[in-house]
Image (cartoon, rainbow, N blue to C red; front, top):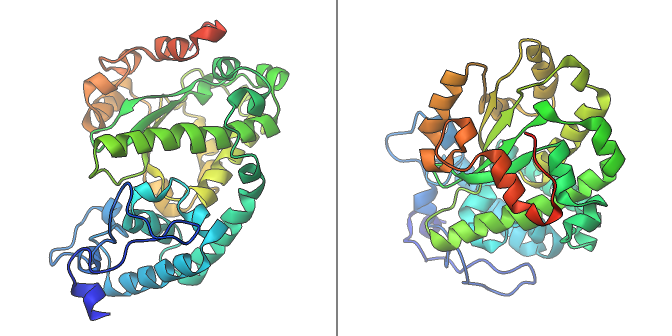
Length: 332
């Protein structure tokens, strides 16, 4: 235990792949030094540092070690669930994501992984739906036309930027082209084939990148009370439920922009679906001047779309370019 606490990086054998064999390919070649896991003498005051490698208490390191050993012992589907973004994420950063999600309460973390393994079991049988058309039952461009979403760039911390526009979500049109089940399958596709690939590509280009999280912008422009129907909320809730149990702690920061006044009541409902620490990462900003400034604090201008105050391609152009073969023009 003393060697794990104070040993040099690489003192411990590398993690094994889900089938039980040792691996040193991609990401961290050896386990994170337990000494490096501990909090520095001067503790960080940034709440986002809590539970991150390099900021753990002795008690949290002990839970980390116990969880790590259990993941290796169980292997198989249990380990595949934990390392959903592959071993390239790195043991220390991957395991602490799960631990933070349950406040380092060991039994709760184990229960969460078991639940996540069950939740994703059916999607895993279908390899998480590699073909988006088969998943949705229609072309992705039609889906994006009804519910625009895209990854336009990366934040200053390396995290992908994700922009979603539920303010223009057309539920009636959505129900004509797909179903809630189709949307669910497409969400698995996005997380396991699109988002995952973006993280892996950035990791390969920047080996020190370990923050497998997202800076999210939720744009509520054009949102009306009539859009906050049970059907519309069920779409958001279904996606949120999957992410919270199967992809914990993947939200770095979320900006909810152009929020109308009546949204405060709806926000109260949505906050009930997520834990308090996650809610603390979410900023509601109605003033365009204020949220543009905040975006520039988090992201370089070239990574921000021009319709969001940056110098990158407009979101409508980016979506049309990505789905150009399907020929659907993007309104928002």
